[in-house]
Length: 205
Image (cartoon, rainbow, N blue to C red; front, side, top):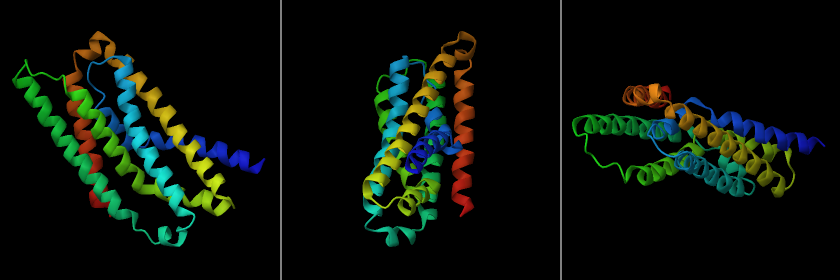
C-alpha cells in the first residue's frame, strides 16, 4: 500500500514539475504559432519525451551508481539550461523581427525545427535542477530497481499528460481571433520571460 502511495506521488510530482516556470516558458516560446491542435500537442510532447528519456536513462544508472550521482554538481547543468534559454529567447525575438520585416517569409519548416529544439531542451532540463535530485527519493525508499523505474515512469507520465493538456489549452486560446491579432506581442513577451529565467539560472549559481 505504501508503495502505491509513493507511485501516485511520483505521478503528481511529475504533473507539478511540468509546470515549473522554466519549462512553461521554454515550451510556450515555441507553441505560439497558429498550428493545428495535433501539431501543437506533438510539439509539447517532444519536450516531455526528451525530458522523460533523460530521467529514465538516469534512473537505470543511478541504482548501481548512486554514490557517483550523489557527488554530481547539478549547478553546471542549470547554467547550461540557462544559456540555452537565453539563446532560444534571442533566436525567437530575431525570428519575430524577420517575420515583421518580410511578411512573405515561409514558415513551413519551423514546426519540424521547433520540435527538435524542444526535444533537445527537454533533454537538458532532464539533467538539471531538482529533477535530478528527485531520482534519489525512490532510490532511498525502494529496495528493488523495478520500483525505481516505476516511480520515474509515472513521474514522466505526469509530465507528459500535463504538458499535453497545457499545449491543448494554448492552442485553443490562441485560436480566438482577438488573441491571434496580438500573437506577435505575446511572442515578444514570452521571449522576454524566457530570457529573464535563463539569465536567472545562469547568475544564480
